[in-house]
Structures are given as structure tokens and as C-alpha cells.
Length: 335
Image 1 (cartoon, helix red, strand yellow):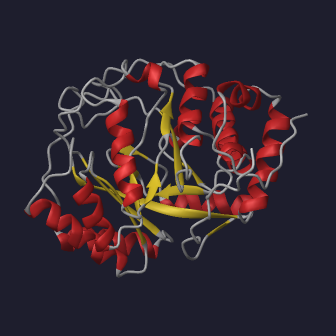
Image 2: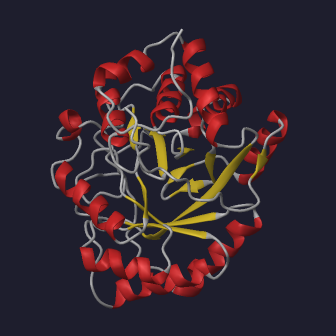
Image 3: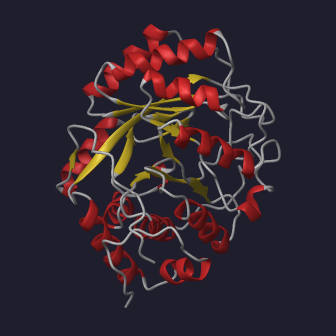
């Protein structure tokens, strides 16, 4: 049986320790994850987020999983940056369906300067005025841009590490791992919380999954939000032929993330269309406490809001009526 203090927050995890957790008997792993979860979060509720693509397609990055890459043949059209009124209408609709966090994604390698960035700042202000958490993912940022977003009221910035440092170069060659970490440092210094996770099912080994989790868990503070995605295989992308991920492996990923980063929101993100209700229930049991509402995540399919409300009702769970308070993830000074 795994032994662990569920109230302890650490930043010095070794790969060996993480491997011992990840590979434990599933019943022990889920039990510990649920114990950690209950020490830091309400057990019967999940946060609902909405994700909108505010600028779609034509991204110069060569991320092998992404249909929005200009290097793919997925047939995703190129749409310019949306107008402010369109975005606010989408945010109001998401809020009416129960979302307390609104995320805006733009297919840029780096956030641009000028009118488009100023329009994004207006979007951040507008969504924030609706009483929702506001998250953006705009590619790499300069330090000045991170400060400007913070000034506009941005709650969180999403910038995923995607996979382990060792496997990363097989998925992306147009941006380095260090560049991703640098953007995260700018975001933190600006006072914006970090949303950072990864994707499984891209051909990586279990050791790569453990390596990704370590990269997330040694960040101090931990990411406030940790989205765990399973690859959505899209025709025309280099990873379209990958085998699907065993659902219980996804549960292990969720459970280990919960144990390593107790106070973080662990978000059950892309790939839920491939999970049964029972598999999703196991993910909640393993410590996931957030989902994305809406039938699309950027350009890939997602269960619609009615299906999610039905699932939560069957499980006796509820959507949070307001965004959870930010957790204190500062070091306790303990090892």
C-alpha cells in the first residue's frame, strides 16, 4: 500500500518516486489520489470551463498533434481574430450553461504586437466583467505582454509542456522546451496563474509520461491548473495513425497528477469523446475536478453540455456555481 501524507505539498519529486506512484496497484493509486483530493478540494463538484478558438488555423508551429498547424493537411480553415462582440456573446452563452471559466485560444506561434493584441486585452476585460475566470493561450509571450495581460485582469495563461523533454523533439521542432518554460516564467512573474499540462497517446512511453509529470510537479508553485489530454487523432496530422490510449492509463495519469500537485485543479481535457461514462467516473474518483463544456475544444469534438449535465447527474455530482478560490501552493518547507 502506498504511504503518503495527503496534506503535504512538495516540489522535489524524483522520477523514481513518481514511477512508484504511477505503477502502483490501481486500487491503491486511486484510493490515495482520492484521499489527497479530499484533503484539498470538495469531493462532489467539478468546475466547468469553456474553450473558444478566437483565431483559427495557419499556425507556423509544426506540432504533430495539431490540425491547426500550417504543416498539417487536416483541412482546418484559416479564420482571423474574432471581434470583441462575438467573443463576449460566446462567453455569456458558456456562463448560462454553467461555465465559470472562459478560455480563449489563438493559433499563433507568438502573441502579436499591435491592434490584435490590444483586441485580446479588450476580450480579457470583457469576459472578466461577466464575473468569469479568464484564461488565454496565445503562444509565446514577451514579459511586457504578460504584464499587459495581468493588467487587463487575466486569471490564467495556458502554455502546455505537452510531453517529456526527451520525447518533445519528436513532436515539435519549431519551439524548444526551454522557450515554453520561459513563457511560463514571464506569466508567473506578472502575477497570472499558470495553466500547464500535457497530452498522452502521441507514441510516448510510460517513462515519458512520468517525465512530463515530474516537469509539472517540480514547478514552484505548481501550476494552478493542470489539463490532462489524450490525443484526438485527426486525419491529415502526422499522429493520425496512433493507437488509442487504454482508458486506465489515462486514469493513472490523472491520479498521479492529483497526488503530485494536491492543490491544483486537474482538468479532464481533450479526448473525452473516447471515454465511456464509467471511465470518466474513474477519472473523477482519481482526482479530476474540472471539465470543458461545449461540443468543441478549439477544432476537435467534445461532449455537448447536455451529455455532461446528464453524466454529472448520474454520478450525483454538481458543477461549481462559482470559480474555486486560488489555492495556496507555496512550499511548506518540508521534504
